Amino acid sequence: MLHTGSRKGRKKLTREQAIGRANAKRRRWVRNLLIEKHRGLCHLCGELVDLRDESGPRYATVDHIVPLSKGGVDALANLALAHASCNQRKGARVPSQFDHDDASIGTELAS
Ligand SMILES: [Zn+2]
Image (cartoon, rainbow, N blue to C red; front, side, top):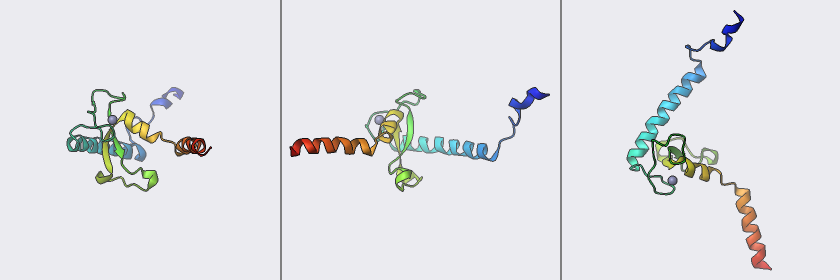
């Protein structure tokens, strides 16, 4: 009887799981709306997304135009279609790196 632990609660969803499923369903719905709205084009590079490229770089993701961390809202007006790779590149922009580059260019010009 000690071996049944891993299967425990498999059928009954916890509150978090239920919310997670509802969110996933909403995200898919939003993504489909955006695919229609943008005619399947990534708003960052302007090329077609590929829904068959699941978990690949050209897969369609939903991008927040103004990031939530910068006060953007989770509403359709603030959402756009983007490739997984473009979305990631945008998200990976670390301000300190840019500051560093700008600073080194600035000092070169100044000297
Ligand atoms: Zn793109």
